[in-house]
Length: 210
Image (cartoon, rainbow, N blue to C red; front, top):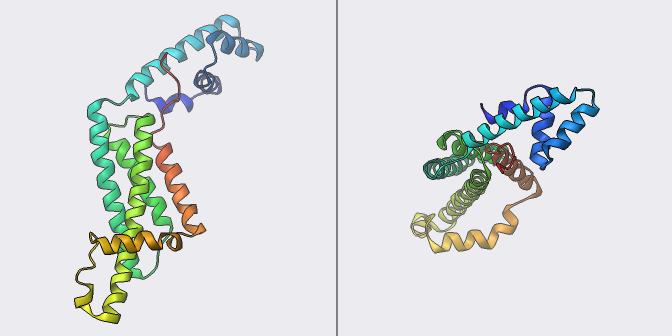
């Protein structure tokens, strides 16, 4: 049973899953269903069946050490690819496409889920958000480096820009010094959407196995 299908079934099943996620006891859930017109015995059987499916789904979605390691690799590759791609597009078009930051969130979230074997859980959510933020930061940094280097070349020549590489202390120092002016409210919108998207993709049922 795939965890996501439980919440997408009939209204009663979705209600039971939500209540289990809140920590509501089975007795209270049964009582609420009975108050809504369901026979007590039917409500009891339904709650027990859904809880059993939820526990199975929780076991299926729980990541192992191996799946966490592969998700780490996948998320890292996605963050690097997304950040580099964003900076290349900006360099070619001379225009910063803000929604590509959202795309990085989608890319890293998808990579974490895919490389983990479609597992879910808090650890993967934190991983997806972290890689999403890292990918966006990388894209911003490489874009900044490109335009500053071009400005140095135009003003002082290629020889002066030779030492201004992405890994140089000068480039990093200049970036952090100008960071406040590089991020606008518009950027925060797309960054926020990226983070929310990355957070939701590996989200589990939210029901404790206890």
